[in-house]
Image (cartoon, rainbow, N blue to C red; front, top):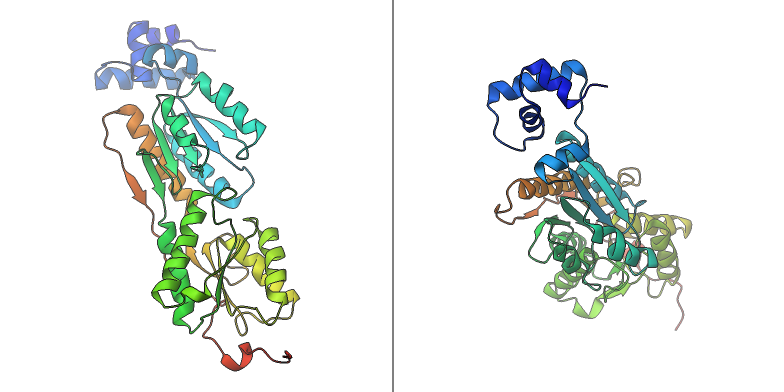
Length: 345
């Protein structure tokens, strides 16, 4: 396998010049840089991470911290991050562990503390454990994906506005008994962004004069959790709502499945709206607010790399758009179809 000395010899330059040309660790004229790169390509030479680190002081590695590896949102963000890093030939070190777990504590106290990275991307970090503050304390650039940041670069949708629009959509269709399904109101078992979505629902209900009708039914933020909670919610005809705002599409789809198994027609008797535009949303004809986590991941990586290259780069908070996607899970309320019938005194 060719080494840096072979590349230098083929390009007619010193080893140090060849190293600078390939790693960007100092000034080299454009003509020399191209000559060295052509020689490296012809010889099949690829600089090792350790060689680059010796010249630049960088590891050429970005760490990604996330609470879950199997959820659609996190997987999509991770793909976007990886795509952007590959273009710059950066390695990715993935650290995934559920919040408040022993593995999570081990991750922060040992693996991340070694600082074998040039910067960090934190996805879905919750404020309760002050983890963002701990990441910033490592002294490396940090970018947050999600609603929570501590003055760092950040990328997200406007979660509160998305839920307000979703709720306003149902109110505009004549619904008054609207439940927010999924998550936990005090934020201990749900993400910061999901808490903002609940706030958006509450704001829309209050603005419409429906404060007395505000209801939050907790559930695990996943399709099975939404299904189980919706079975209980919809099973009682006396308290059954006419509209559901799912904290995310997975919960909303779970509610649609529960409604179908209970014989409740969607949208004739129950309107359901989600937030995310999950891969399953179109399959279930779910009306939703779209977000593009893959694009958020790319944007986060690009912000981080910019900050690694120039630590004086201004901090940015990027809000990705979240347009309403109309499908067939919501409809104008039908008072006759939605009426409670057959219930005694």
